[in-house]
Length: 187
Length: 228
Image (cartoon, rainbow over all chains, first blue to last red; front, top):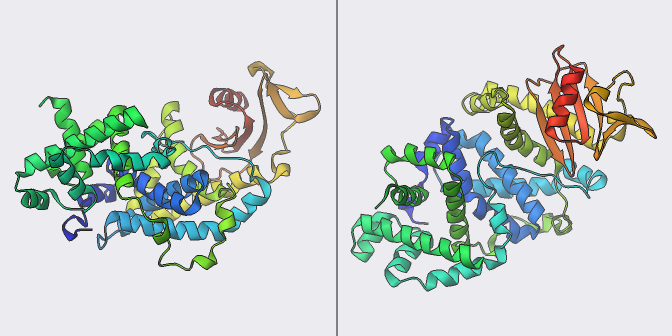
């Protein structure tokens, strides 16, 4: 991760730390898929990944004030998720649940945002997104991958590609729109 | 560029942490109001996840994997306590805002962000509720205490012939319990467990009504109003 974008979420984090639920929901929605995917890659269980991912964000909400910005927000969230995953396995509540009500399930609704997990049911199709990105026009692909994969800031991308920041911003947006169209059609 | 496209481009920029601070609030307010923007934001996260998919072999690279029992993870189980915590946070706010209830729990959470003391108070309340709900789920005897004196015929519920503790109406059925302590509850809350729902309703005299079963929100509130 590039150091300049280490705390790319700092403004939203500040708002969330001051009790702004909209900012927190934004961050939650932004990172939920990555947290879920990380947990899923380990648990191979949709239900477990969903439970731990959502528990993670409750913890994040409760402890957001303790985030000091010394790491990227996702790294911090990821650590919480991993610790919860470890505790989850060892917890007595889990064992109790296994004994008494293991055949049941809990339905969880988000307050206002659509549950991104629905989209993640097609986790195996995510490779299709990568393939699609590789087919984007070169200018869009370069800006988008520099941002998403290499973690470059808009300013850095502007310098690398020798284009104005506004153009970088527009290309990344258009690339995302293209991928969204692909998702709507193919996934 | 039209206003909507401009807003969407701002959403993309905010996702990247590149939006000017003066424009952030407008985007946040728009996202909170518009489902299409919420979905777009969710999909931005999905795309980011796809492009940054972690290598499964690296997930626990810094942890001792041997300490984890993988069979647990593959068994399709879940933690009730974790789910309850989530439910306390998420479902409560969604359900109650629809019911037009107050926002005291939400405000408690807001306070908890800024105050250790408030956080402890909230945690105590939530712990009480978690314990209570865990008892409802895990202990069959706990809910086998439906008072025989309660009559719910005015809302269409009669007692099941072979088990007088259970009320039924069509496909709906439930048991109920009344606590003499208030559990710190200030408003109606509910938890879903499988196809059943647990409702906790603060009564006017300070007691708490627990309704557990296959019953929808409106019916549960009608029952609560009758008892109240």
